[in-house]
Length: 133
Image (cartoon, rainbow, N blue to C red):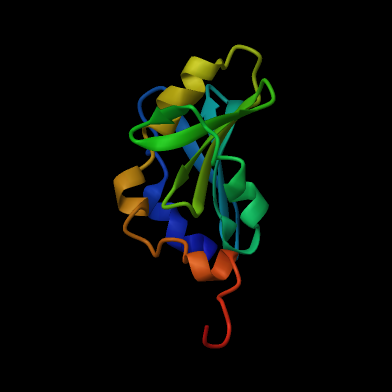
């Protein structure tokens, strides 16, 4: 997917927060979450279609959020996977921005909207059997 495709799914800013686009490229978009001029976290969406290993880390997840598997990546990042393809992550940039804060902001993405995009095709991740049996 084009990075611009993802812009519609990011959380909107509010009275206390600014959500500012910082980077957009093929299959990736990134925003800063700012409060009073301080960057609290980075918000990202990336298409894992060319990075199956990024999607694979969610296979053994024992925790879900809004029905999607979630994985902590170190102590400062939490991600979830939509349609076995789209990785949504919140990465803390302030020591005061906790895992609970990351989970809260993950829920503010338009996950249902993102789920309407094309899902992963298993044939892209695993070679199809060739020839007749």
